[in-house]
Length: 209
Image (cartoon, rainbow, N blue to C red; front, side):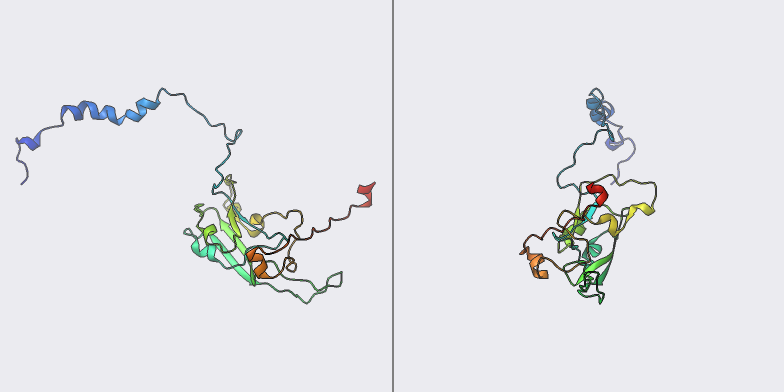
């Protein structure tokens, strides 16, 4: 039954509620207002990120330069923000074209049956949660420590495959080319020898002089 006017339930706020509660509510303010202010000197001074920081994505390569991505699209299915778009295509070991050295050219970009022909990440949608890298079966997609992704153009925040691919390291060969490390099982199990270093481009006569 509701309290009638004039009864105990109609009393106003107590003395504690009038005096102490407002002070307690500003407790955090009172505790910090006299502390020394710390100003981050960004971007002049950049602090290192945590080792497992979730930054910009990277598409990794095998030691011979082939792409690890097999175009399975699991990363796109796992993305809760629908920020990843992948189109897979079939690899081929023989394009029917003969190169300048007399060998038949390869159309192989990865060590699997397929490769990611189109790979896009829309950083206007991406929330950098890392679910995509957990879904990747070949560890093709990882996240770097790069966090400076701001831009004044919406189109430039849609990263293409060329923006995400890891650079070629010494000993790697630009795809397409045949598998240099064995079969596809050897790649995925890691049972392969390090590739023979690709010979460097000979210097010109002008550079030699």
